[in-house]
Image 1 (cartoon, rainbow, N blue to C red):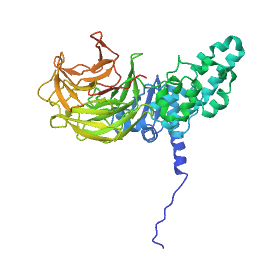
Image 2 (image 1 turned 180 degrees about the vertical axis):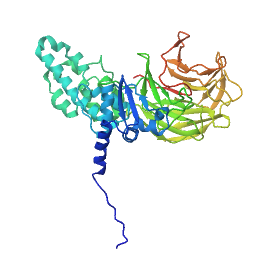
Image 3 (image 1 turned 90 degrees about the vertical axis):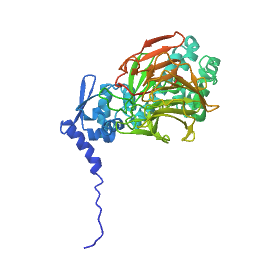
Image 4 (image 1 turned 90 degrees about the horizontal axis):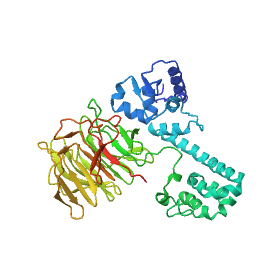
Amino acid sequence: MSNENLVFQQNDLFPSAFPLMADIRRQGKLCDVVLKVDGQHFSAHKIVLASTIPYFHAMFMNDMIESRNKEIEIKCIDATALEALVNFAYSGKVILDKNNVQSIMIGASYLQLNKVRDACANYLLQREEQVFEACMRWMKHYVEKRKEHLPELLSLVRLPLLSPLYITDRVRNEDQIRYSIQCRKSSRVLNNFRDLVDEALTFHLIPERRALIQSFRTEPRVCDIKGYIYVVGGLNRHGDSLSTVEYYDPKIDKWHMAPPMSMMRSRLGVAVLKSKLYAFGGYNGKDRLSSVEVYDAVKKEWSMVTPMLCKRSALGATALGDIIYVCGGYDGVTSLNSVERYHPSTNSWCSLAPMNKSRSAGAVIACQGYIYALGGHDGLSIFDSVERYNPATNTWIEAPPMLTKKVSARGCNARRWTYVAPRNAQRSRVALTANMVYDPKMDKWTYAADMIAHEGGVGLGVISIP
Protein backbone atom coordinates (compact mmCIF):
# COMPACT_ATOMS: atom_id res chain seq x y z
CA MET A 1 0.00 0.00 0.00
CA SER A 2 1.31 3.44 -0.92
CA ASN A 3 2.35 5.82 1.88
CA GLU A 4 1.09 8.82 -0.08
CA ASN A 5 -1.84 10.76 1.39
CA LEU A 6 -5.13 10.90 -0.43
CA VAL A 7 -7.22 14.04 -0.13
CA PHE A 8 -10.90 13.53 -0.83
CA GLN A 9 -13.05 16.61 -1.41
CA GLN A 10 -16.81 16.57 -1.77
CA ASN A 11 -17.49 19.61 -3.92
CA ASP A 12 -21.23 19.67 -3.30
CA LEU A 13 -20.94 19.56 0.50
CA PHE A 14 -21.03 23.30 1.13
CA PRO A 15 -23.65 24.13 -1.54
CA SER A 16 -25.92 21.45 -0.10
CA ALA A 17 -25.30 22.39 3.54
CA PHE A 18 -26.97 25.80 3.51
CA PRO A 19 -30.26 24.62 1.96
CA LEU A 20 -30.33 21.93 4.63
CA MET A 21 -29.73 24.52 7.37
CA ALA A 22 -32.52 26.65 5.89
CA ASP A 23 -34.83 23.63 6.07
CA ILE A 24 -33.83 23.02 9.70
CA ARG A 25 -34.65 26.66 10.42
CA ARG A 26 -38.07 26.37 8.76
CA GLN A 27 -38.78 23.44 11.08
CA GLY A 28 -37.76 25.57 14.07
CA LYS A 29 -35.04 23.09 15.04
CA LEU A 30 -31.73 23.99 16.72
CA CYS A 31 -32.48 27.75 16.55
CA ASP A 32 -30.68 29.64 19.32
CA VAL A 33 -31.65 33.27 18.68
CA VAL A 34 -34.84 35.20 17.94
CA LEU A 35 -34.66 38.55 16.11
CA LYS A 36 -37.49 40.91 17.05
CA VAL A 37 -38.62 43.87 14.96
CA ASP A 38 -41.96 45.69 14.70
CA GLY A 39 -43.70 43.03 16.79
CA GLN A 40 -42.53 40.19 14.54
CA HIS A 41 -40.14 37.39 15.50
CA PHE A 42 -37.61 35.58 13.28
CA SER A 43 -35.81 32.50 14.61
CA ALA A 44 -32.31 31.74 13.35
CA HIS A 45 -28.97 30.14 14.18
CA LYS A 46 -26.23 32.38 15.58
CA ILE A 47 -23.50 30.45 13.78
CA VAL A 48 -25.19 31.09 10.42
CA LEU A 49 -25.81 34.79 11.12
CA ALA A 50 -22.25 35.30 12.38
CA SER A 51 -20.81 33.53 9.33
CA THR A 52 -22.79 35.42 6.70
CA ILE A 53 -23.74 38.84 8.11
CA PRO A 54 -20.86 41.12 9.31
CA TYR A 55 -23.09 43.01 11.77
CA PHE A 56 -23.93 39.80 13.65
CA HIS A 57 -20.34 38.57 13.39
CA ALA A 58 -19.21 41.69 15.27
CA MET A 59 -22.05 41.32 17.76
CA PHE A 60 -21.56 37.63 18.57
CA MET A 61 -17.76 37.47 18.37
CA ASN A 62 -17.03 40.57 20.47
CA ASP A 63 -18.95 39.31 23.49
CA MET A 64 -21.53 42.07 23.36
CA ILE A 65 -24.49 41.70 25.72
CA GLU A 66 -26.72 40.72 22.80
CA SER A 67 -24.50 37.69 22.13
CA ARG A 68 -25.71 36.20 25.41
CA ASN A 69 -29.39 36.93 24.84
CA LYS A 70 -31.93 34.53 23.40
CA GLU A 71 -33.93 37.42 21.93
CA ILE A 72 -32.41 40.45 20.19
CA GLU A 73 -34.38 43.54 19.24
CA ILE A 74 -33.35 44.99 15.89
CA LYS A 75 -33.89 48.69 15.20
CA CYS A 76 -33.69 50.80 12.03
CA ILE A 77 -34.74 47.87 9.79
CA ASP A 78 -38.34 47.06 8.95
CA ALA A 79 -39.67 43.53 9.34
CA THR A 80 -39.94 42.78 5.62
CA ALA A 81 -36.32 43.75 4.98
CA LEU A 82 -35.01 41.83 7.99
CA GLU A 83 -36.87 38.70 6.94
CA ALA A 84 -35.46 38.96 3.41
CA LEU A 85 -31.90 39.47 4.67
CA VAL A 86 -32.06 36.63 7.19
CA ASN A 87 -33.33 34.38 4.40
CA PHE A 88 -30.41 35.67 2.31
CA ALA A 89 -28.02 34.47 5.03
CA TYR A 90 -29.21 30.92 4.37
CA SER A 91 -29.82 31.03 0.62
CA GLY A 92 -27.50 33.70 -0.78
CA LYS A 93 -30.46 35.10 -2.73
CA VAL A 94 -32.73 38.11 -2.31
CA ILE A 95 -35.54 39.22 -4.61
CA LEU A 96 -35.65 42.98 -5.24
CA ASP A 97 -38.65 44.89 -6.52
CA LYS A 98 -39.89 48.47 -6.55
CA ASN A 99 -41.72 47.95 -3.25
CA ASN A 100 -38.87 46.54 -1.17
CA VAL A 101 -35.60 47.77 -2.69
CA GLN A 102 -35.23 50.88 -0.54
CA SER A 103 -35.95 49.13 2.76
CA ILE A 104 -33.65 46.23 1.83
CA MET A 105 -30.88 48.66 0.85
CA ILE A 106 -31.17 50.42 4.20
CA GLY A 107 -31.20 47.08 6.02
CA ALA A 108 -28.25 45.72 4.02
CA SER A 109 -26.26 48.87 4.76
CA TYR A 110 -27.06 48.57 8.47
CA LEU A 111 -26.05 44.89 8.54
CA GLN A 112 -22.94 45.63 6.40
CA LEU A 113 -24.05 43.34 3.57
CA ASN A 114 -22.25 45.50 1.04
CA LYS A 115 -22.86 43.34 -2.02
CA VAL A 116 -26.59 43.32 -1.35
CA ARG A 117 -26.46 47.09 -0.79
CA ASP A 118 -24.65 47.55 -4.12
CA ALA A 119 -27.18 45.34 -5.91
CA CYS A 120 -29.96 47.56 -4.54
CA ALA A 121 -28.07 50.65 -5.69
CA ASN A 122 -27.69 49.22 -9.20
CA TYR A 123 -31.41 48.45 -9.26
CA LEU A 124 -32.15 52.05 -8.34
CA LEU A 125 -29.79 53.31 -11.03
CA GLN A 126 -31.77 51.42 -13.64
CA ARG A 127 -34.99 52.89 -12.30
CA GLU A 128 -33.68 56.45 -12.65
CA GLU A 129 -34.10 55.97 -16.39
CA GLN A 130 -37.79 55.36 -15.73
CA VAL A 131 -37.95 58.61 -13.76
CA PHE A 132 -36.48 60.50 -16.72
CA GLU A 133 -38.81 58.82 -19.22
CA ALA A 134 -41.85 59.55 -17.03
CA CYS A 135 -40.88 63.24 -16.91
CA MET A 136 -40.54 63.40 -20.67
CA ARG A 137 -43.87 61.62 -21.26
CA TRP A 138 -45.62 64.07 -18.93
CA MET A 139 -44.05 67.05 -20.70
CA LYS A 140 -44.82 65.79 -24.22
CA HIS A 141 -48.49 65.21 -23.43
CA TYR A 142 -49.00 69.01 -23.57
CA VAL A 143 -45.71 70.30 -24.94
CA GLU A 144 -46.68 73.94 -25.41
CA LYS A 145 -48.13 74.29 -21.92
CA ARG A 146 -45.64 72.15 -20.05
CA LYS A 147 -42.27 72.77 -21.70
CA GLU A 148 -41.71 75.84 -19.53
CA HIS A 149 -41.60 73.51 -16.51
CA LEU A 150 -38.95 71.24 -18.04
CA PRO A 151 -35.88 72.97 -16.51
CA GLU A 152 -37.26 72.66 -12.99
CA LEU A 153 -38.43 69.11 -13.65
CA LEU A 154 -35.10 68.05 -15.12
CA SER A 155 -33.21 69.49 -12.16
CA LEU A 156 -35.03 66.99 -9.94
CA VAL A 157 -33.91 63.99 -11.99
CA ARG A 158 -30.69 62.38 -10.76
CA LEU A 159 -28.96 62.54 -14.13
CA PRO A 160 -25.51 61.56 -12.73
CA LEU A 161 -27.01 58.21 -11.76
CA LEU A 162 -27.87 57.42 -15.37
CA SER A 163 -25.36 55.45 -17.43
CA PRO A 164 -23.01 57.54 -19.63
CA LEU A 165 -24.35 55.77 -22.72
CA TYR A 166 -27.95 56.61 -21.82
CA ILE A 167 -27.01 60.25 -21.20
CA THR A 168 -25.25 60.66 -24.55
CA ASP A 169 -27.67 58.60 -26.68
CA ARG A 170 -30.97 59.50 -25.06
CA VAL A 171 -30.83 62.57 -22.82
CA ARG A 172 -28.58 64.78 -24.96
CA ASN A 173 -30.57 63.95 -28.10
CA GLU A 174 -33.91 64.93 -26.59
CA ASP A 175 -35.02 67.94 -28.66
CA GLN A 176 -36.68 69.81 -25.81
CA ILE A 177 -33.47 69.57 -23.79
CA ARG A 178 -31.14 70.44 -26.66
CA TYR A 179 -32.99 73.65 -27.47
CA SER A 180 -33.87 74.73 -23.94
CA ILE A 181 -31.54 77.50 -22.77
CA GLN A 182 -32.84 77.09 -19.24
CA CYS A 183 -31.92 73.41 -19.22
CA ARG A 184 -28.48 74.17 -20.58
CA LYS A 185 -27.89 76.95 -18.06
CA SER A 186 -29.53 76.31 -14.73
CA SER A 187 -27.35 78.42 -12.45
CA ARG A 188 -30.09 78.46 -9.83
CA VAL A 189 -29.49 74.79 -9.24
CA LEU A 190 -25.78 74.44 -9.96
CA ASN A 191 -22.78 76.26 -8.57
CA ASN A 192 -19.78 75.79 -10.87
CA PHE A 193 -21.24 73.37 -13.39
CA ARG A 194 -24.03 75.25 -15.19
CA ASP A 195 -25.15 72.45 -17.45
CA LEU A 196 -27.26 69.66 -15.97
CA VAL A 197 -26.31 67.22 -18.70
CA ASP A 198 -22.63 68.13 -18.55
CA GLU A 199 -22.76 67.72 -14.79
CA ALA A 200 -23.94 64.16 -15.25
CA LEU A 201 -21.26 63.37 -17.83
CA THR A 202 -18.54 65.00 -15.74
CA PHE A 203 -19.61 62.86 -12.78
CA HIS A 204 -18.88 59.74 -14.87
CA LEU A 205 -15.92 60.84 -16.98
CA ILE A 206 -13.88 62.86 -14.47
CA PRO A 207 -14.12 61.05 -11.10
CA GLU A 208 -11.67 63.44 -9.42
CA ARG A 209 -14.23 66.25 -9.80
CA ARG A 210 -17.06 64.38 -8.10
CA ALA A 211 -16.36 66.11 -4.81
CA LEU A 212 -17.08 69.45 -6.53
CA ILE A 213 -20.48 68.43 -7.88
CA GLN A 214 -21.97 66.52 -4.96
CA SER A 215 -25.70 67.16 -4.67
CA PHE A 216 -28.90 65.23 -4.15
CA ARG A 217 -28.72 64.31 -7.84
CA THR A 218 -25.55 62.26 -7.28
CA GLU A 219 -27.11 60.20 -4.48
CA PRO A 220 -29.48 57.20 -4.75
CA ARG A 221 -33.14 57.76 -3.93
CA VAL A 222 -32.75 56.43 -0.40
CA CYS A 223 -31.75 57.95 2.94
CA ASP A 224 -28.06 58.81 3.44
CA ILE A 225 -26.03 59.11 6.63
CA LYS A 226 -23.94 62.20 5.85
CA GLY A 227 -24.51 65.31 7.91
CA TYR A 228 -25.24 63.65 11.26
CA ILE A 229 -23.62 63.54 14.68
CA TYR A 230 -22.03 60.16 15.45
CA VAL A 231 -21.65 58.61 18.89
CA VAL A 232 -19.08 55.83 18.89
CA GLY A 233 -18.45 52.99 21.33
CA GLY A 234 -18.78 53.71 25.05
CA LEU A 235 -20.61 51.77 27.74
CA ASN A 236 -24.02 50.20 28.09
CA ARG A 237 -26.05 50.33 31.29
CA HIS A 238 -24.26 47.24 32.60
CA GLY A 239 -20.84 48.85 32.22
CA ASP A 240 -19.73 46.76 29.24
CA SER A 241 -17.61 48.36 26.52
CA LEU A 242 -19.38 48.60 23.17
CA SER A 243 -18.51 48.46 19.49
CA THR A 244 -21.89 50.07 18.83
CA VAL A 245 -22.24 53.23 16.74
CA GLU A 246 -25.29 55.46 16.47
CA TYR A 247 -25.96 58.77 14.78
CA TYR A 248 -28.21 61.74 15.46
CA ASP A 249 -30.28 63.55 12.85
CA PRO A 250 -30.69 67.13 14.14
CA LYS A 251 -33.39 67.87 11.57
CA ILE A 252 -35.84 65.39 13.12
CA ASP A 253 -34.24 65.15 16.59
CA LYS A 254 -33.84 61.37 16.36
CA TRP A 255 -31.11 58.73 16.84
CA HIS A 256 -30.36 55.78 14.51
CA MET A 257 -27.96 52.81 14.61
CA ALA A 258 -24.93 52.55 12.28
CA PRO A 259 -22.48 49.69 11.51
CA PRO A 260 -20.43 48.74 14.60
CA MET A 261 -16.66 49.06 14.94
CA SER A 262 -14.43 46.00 14.59
CA MET A 263 -13.71 45.98 18.32
CA MET A 264 -15.24 47.19 21.58
CA ARG A 265 -14.08 50.62 22.74
CA SER A 266 -15.10 52.81 25.65
CA ARG A 267 -13.39 56.04 26.75
CA LEU A 268 -12.08 56.43 23.21
CA GLY A 269 -11.24 59.49 21.14
CA VAL A 270 -13.11 60.36 17.96
CA ALA A 271 -12.34 62.84 15.18
CA VAL A 272 -13.72 63.50 11.70
CA LEU A 273 -11.57 64.46 8.72
CA LYS A 274 -12.72 64.69 5.10
CA SER A 275 -16.00 62.90 5.82
CA LYS A 276 -14.22 59.98 7.48
CA LEU A 277 -14.67 59.23 11.16
CA TYR A 278 -11.67 57.98 13.17
CA ALA A 279 -11.87 56.04 16.46
CA PHE A 280 -8.71 56.22 18.59
CA GLY A 281 -7.62 53.94 21.42
CA GLY A 282 -9.98 53.50 24.35
CA TYR A 283 -10.65 50.59 26.68
CA ASN A 284 -12.07 47.20 25.67
CA GLY A 285 -12.92 45.98 29.16
CA LYS A 286 -9.47 44.44 29.69
CA ASP A 287 -6.78 46.64 28.17
CA ARG A 288 -6.08 50.20 27.08
CA LEU A 289 -5.75 50.38 23.31
CA SER A 290 -3.43 52.07 20.84
CA SER A 291 -5.31 50.78 17.79
CA VAL A 292 -7.16 53.12 15.41
CA GLU A 293 -9.94 52.43 12.93
CA VAL A 294 -11.67 54.65 10.40
CA TYR A 295 -15.28 54.70 9.18
CA ASP A 296 -16.06 55.51 5.56
CA ALA A 297 -19.50 57.14 5.53
CA VAL A 298 -19.98 56.42 1.83
CA LYS A 299 -19.02 52.74 1.88
CA LYS A 300 -20.40 52.33 5.42
CA GLU A 301 -17.32 50.30 6.36
CA TRP A 302 -14.73 50.34 9.17
CA SER A 303 -11.03 49.62 8.47
CA MET A 304 -7.85 49.66 10.59
CA VAL A 305 -5.02 52.21 10.19
CA THR A 306 -1.62 52.67 11.89
CA PRO A 307 -1.92 52.56 15.71
CA MET A 308 -0.95 55.47 17.97
CA LEU A 309 2.52 55.70 19.52
CA CYS A 310 1.15 54.81 22.96
CA LYS A 311 -1.94 53.25 24.49
CA ARG A 312 -4.59 55.75 25.57
CA SER A 313 -8.08 55.69 26.99
CA ALA A 314 -10.07 58.77 28.06
CA LEU A 315 -8.17 60.80 25.44
CA GLY A 316 -9.20 63.82 23.41
CA ALA A 317 -9.01 63.94 19.60
CA THR A 318 -9.78 66.55 16.96
CA ALA A 319 -8.92 67.42 13.36
CA LEU A 320 -7.35 70.67 12.18
CA GLY A 321 -6.44 71.14 8.54
CA ASP A 322 -5.40 67.78 7.14
CA ILE A 323 -4.08 66.47 10.46
CA ILE A 324 -5.66 64.79 13.49
CA TYR A 325 -4.41 65.55 17.01
CA VAL A 326 -4.80 63.28 20.06
CA CYS A 327 -4.13 64.69 23.52
CA GLY A 328 -3.74 63.27 26.99
CA GLY A 329 -5.68 60.31 28.31
CA TYR A 330 -4.85 57.42 30.62
CA ASP A 331 -2.44 54.55 29.90
CA GLY A 332 -3.60 52.28 32.73
CA VAL A 333 -1.07 53.70 35.20
CA THR A 334 -1.19 57.49 35.05
CA SER A 335 -2.89 60.42 33.33
CA LEU A 336 -1.01 61.67 30.28
CA ASN A 337 0.05 65.09 29.03
CA SER A 338 1.59 63.74 25.83
CA VAL A 339 0.28 64.79 22.42
CA GLU A 340 0.68 63.17 19.01
CA ARG A 341 -0.68 63.85 15.56
CA TYR A 342 -1.76 61.60 12.72
CA HIS A 343 -1.20 62.27 9.00
CA PRO A 344 -3.85 60.33 7.02
CA SER A 345 -1.99 61.00 3.76
CA THR A 346 1.04 59.02 4.98
CA ASN A 347 -0.76 56.89 7.59
CA SER A 348 1.87 57.91 10.17
CA TRP A 349 2.19 59.42 13.67
CA CYS A 350 4.62 61.87 15.31
CA SER A 351 4.98 63.33 18.82
CA LEU A 352 4.32 67.01 19.65
CA ALA A 353 4.92 69.32 22.60
CA PRO A 354 3.11 68.03 25.72
CA MET A 355 0.27 69.91 27.40
CA ASN A 356 0.94 71.93 30.56
CA LYS A 357 -1.30 69.58 32.55
CA SER A 358 -1.84 65.85 32.41
CA ARG A 359 -5.47 65.54 31.31
CA SER A 360 -7.61 62.44 31.34
CA ALA A 361 -11.25 62.52 30.21
CA GLY A 362 -11.10 66.10 28.95
CA ALA A 363 -12.54 67.56 25.76
CA VAL A 364 -10.36 68.58 22.80
CA ILE A 365 -11.72 70.95 20.14
CA ALA A 366 -10.23 72.69 17.09
CA CYS A 367 -11.36 76.27 16.56
CA GLN A 368 -10.00 79.11 14.39
CA GLY A 369 -6.62 77.47 13.79
CA TYR A 370 -5.93 76.40 17.38
CA ILE A 371 -6.43 73.26 19.47
CA TYR A 372 -8.22 73.69 22.81
CA ALA A 373 -7.96 71.18 25.68
CA LEU A 374 -10.81 71.66 28.17
CA GLY A 375 -11.37 70.25 31.65
CA GLY A 376 -10.53 66.67 32.54
CA HIS A 377 -8.61 65.42 35.57
CA ASP A 378 -5.16 64.14 36.57
CA GLY A 379 -6.32 61.41 38.93
CA LEU A 380 -6.39 63.80 41.89
CA SER A 381 -8.19 66.97 40.81
CA ILE A 382 -10.96 67.83 38.34
CA PHE A 383 -10.12 70.82 36.13
CA ASP A 384 -12.01 73.83 34.86
CA SER A 385 -8.81 74.99 33.14
CA VAL A 386 -8.36 75.37 29.39
CA GLU A 387 -5.14 75.47 27.37
CA ARG A 388 -4.56 76.32 23.74
CA TYR A 389 -2.10 74.79 21.27
CA ASN A 390 -0.58 76.74 18.38
CA PRO A 391 0.46 74.34 15.58
CA ALA A 392 2.70 77.00 14.03
CA THR A 393 4.91 77.28 17.15
CA ASN A 394 4.26 73.83 18.68
CA THR A 395 3.46 75.46 22.04
CA TRP A 396 0.66 75.35 24.64
CA ILE A 397 -0.54 78.41 26.60
CA GLU A 398 -3.25 78.88 29.23
CA ALA A 399 -6.67 80.09 28.06
CA PRO A 400 -9.67 81.42 30.07
CA PRO A 401 -11.16 78.64 32.24
CA MET A 402 -14.65 77.18 31.88
CA LEU A 403 -17.46 78.24 34.19
CA THR A 404 -17.66 74.79 35.81
CA LYS A 405 -15.29 71.89 36.26
CA LYS A 406 -15.92 69.06 33.83
CA VAL A 407 -14.63 65.53 33.42
CA SER A 408 -15.60 62.87 30.87
CA ALA A 409 -16.96 65.65 28.67
CA ARG A 410 -17.10 65.31 24.92
CA GLY A 411 -17.22 68.28 22.59
CA CYS A 412 -17.71 68.88 18.90
CA ASN A 413 -17.74 71.98 16.75
CA ALA A 414 -20.85 71.90 14.55
CA ARG A 415 -22.01 75.52 14.34
CA ARG A 416 -22.90 74.90 17.98
CA TRP A 417 -20.65 73.32 20.57
CA THR A 418 -22.26 70.14 21.84
CA TYR A 419 -21.21 68.72 25.20
CA VAL A 420 -22.09 65.29 26.52
CA ALA A 421 -21.16 65.24 30.21
CA PRO A 422 -21.69 62.11 32.29
CA ARG A 423 -19.78 63.54 35.27
CA ASN A 424 -18.87 66.96 36.67
CA ALA A 425 -17.74 68.45 39.95
CA GLN A 426 -21.25 69.25 41.17
CA ARG A 427 -22.97 65.92 40.52
CA SER A 428 -21.70 62.40 41.09
CA ARG A 429 -23.59 61.03 38.10
CA VAL A 430 -25.48 62.52 35.16
CA ALA A 431 -26.93 60.11 32.59
CA LEU A 432 -25.14 60.37 29.27
CA THR A 433 -28.43 60.04 27.46
CA ALA A 434 -29.21 63.60 28.61
CA ASN A 435 -27.49 65.50 25.79
CA MET A 436 -27.03 69.25 26.02
CA VAL A 437 -26.48 71.65 23.14
CA TYR A 438 -24.91 75.07 23.64
CA ASP A 439 -25.52 77.93 21.20
CA PRO A 440 -22.82 80.63 21.64
CA LYS A 441 -24.90 83.27 19.85
CA MET A 442 -27.88 82.76 22.17
CA ASP A 443 -25.65 81.97 25.16
CA LYS A 444 -28.10 79.21 26.00
CA TRP A 445 -28.11 75.48 26.74
CA THR A 446 -30.93 73.20 25.54
CA TYR A 447 -31.59 69.46 25.69
CA ALA A 448 -31.51 67.24 22.60
CA ALA A 449 -33.12 63.83 22.11
CA ASP A 450 -31.91 60.90 24.23
CA MET A 451 -29.61 58.33 22.64
CA ILE A 452 -30.61 54.70 22.10
CA ALA A 453 -27.94 52.42 23.57
CA HIS A 454 -25.09 54.37 25.17
CA GLU A 455 -24.64 55.19 28.84
CA GLY A 456 -21.10 56.60 29.14
CA GLY A 457 -17.51 56.74 27.90
CA VAL A 458 -18.40 57.53 24.29
CA GLY A 459 -16.56 59.36 21.55
CA LEU A 460 -18.36 62.13 19.67
CA GLY A 461 -17.86 63.38 16.12
CA VAL A 462 -19.62 65.34 13.39
CA ILE A 463 -19.68 64.70 9.65
CA SER A 464 -20.55 68.05 8.08
CA ILE A 465 -23.80 68.55 6.20
CA PRO A 466 -22.98 69.25 2.55
